[in-house]
Image (cartoon, rainbow, N blue to C red; front, side, top):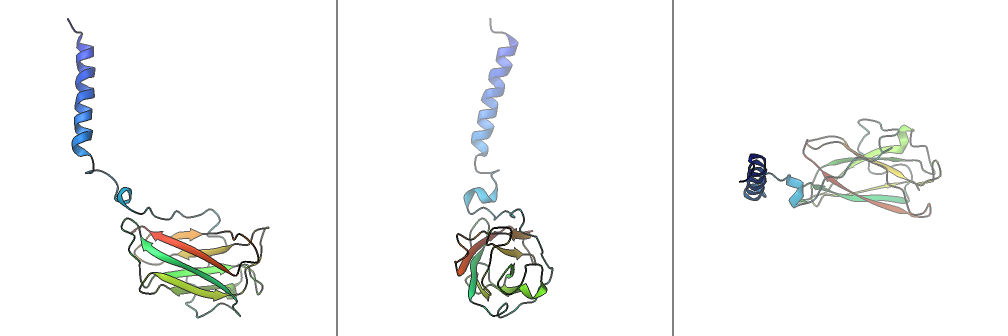
Length: 162
């Protein structure tokens, strides 16, 4: 004779397997099927200035900050998204208002902003970028450059609806 404990355990295991099999794909997160959102990076919000103006260029230029902005899940490009950029450069510190500026993405979700050459701060040449205004969650990034001699930095955002 089989004990009631073994019968219940068998029933629970069989029932759980049936529920998991029947529900596969119905309760999975949207990002499991596509592109996951970009997480905020530690230190990304350092010296952030809300509402930095949209500019044609920061300072005298010579360095290009570029990238793309796409929607999480399906990866579609997002046009008209505001990306704020700031850095420690040959012309100023990342805390200086004149070292901050913003740009908008084009119809393909691409942004480009010219700025002065980024120089090392705390031993690392790095930029700061933020998506902070709209229908998506705020993301702060702090990418470190391979070399202080690099004259461009490409950064991609994948945004999650707010």
